Image 1 (tube, rainbow, N blue to C red):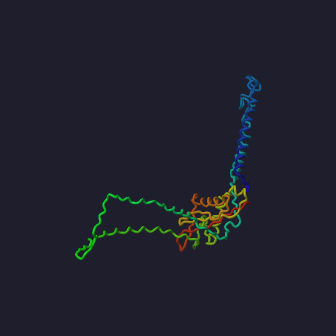
Image 2: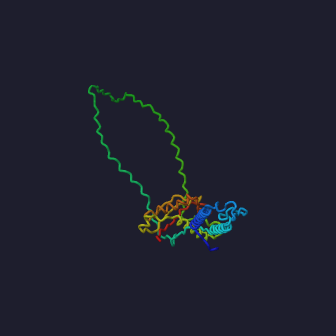
Image 3: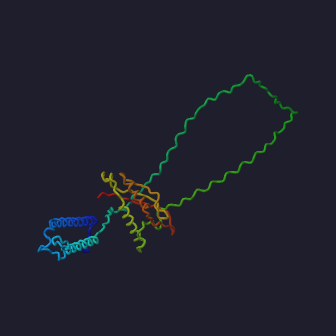
Length: 301
C-alpha cells in the first residue's frame, strides 16, 4: 500500500462512481420494496392464522432492517476505500526540461551604439527685397558749416558713466552622479534559494545557477510561431541587479526571432512581478550594481 499513488482525476472519478452506485442502490431497493408492498395489507387481515402482529414488524416482507448488517458492512468498506484513496492522492510536479549546457555561452557580444536621428538640413535663406527709401523733395536740405579755425573752442563731450553690469547668474547645480554599474565583481549576484544550506562559495554558486535555470525553464513557453517554423538557438538577455536585489533595465541583446526574445524578456521580468530578489553583488564588502548576462536556449524536443 505504501507504493500506491493516484492522481487527482482518478480520485475524483472514483468518488463520483461511488456516489452514483449508492444512489442507484437506493433507487433499486425502493422499487423492490414498493413492488413487495402491493396488496400486502389484504394478506394479513385480522384473524388470519399467518398474522405476525405479535412480532417485531407488521409486514415481514418489507422489513428494511433485515439488510442493516449488509448496509453497514458496505458503508464500512466504501469509507475505508475512500480513506485509502485520499491518503494515496499524489500531486505530481510539472517536469522541467532544461537544455544541455543551458548557461554555456562563449561568443562575444557586439553591441551597436544607439542610433540618433540626424538633424534636418537648415532651410534655404529667404531673400527679401528692401524697398528704396523715399525722399520727400519738399523737405529742405540744410548744410551746417563745420569749419574749424584757431579761434574755435572745442569742448569735449561730457563723460557718460556706464551702468554696472548685472551679476552673472549662479552656476547650475551639479548633475546627480550615477552610480557605476560593474560587470565583474568579487561576489557576483546570485539567484535566491540556497543561502540556508551551509554551502561553500563554489557550491553556493552552482546551487544558485541551478535554481535560476529551474525558474527560467519552468516558466518559459516556447513561442508557437517558433515551434511551427523550427526556430532554435540562444537568446541573450542583459539586466542590472540593483543593490536591493531587484532586476532593472532588462534588454534583449541577441534575438533569434519568432518571438523568442520577447519570451526571454518576459520570464526575466517575472522575477520582479513574483517578488524574487537576488542576492546583490559585492565589491570590497559593499553592495554594488552589477550588469548580468543570461543566455536563454530554445531547443525543440
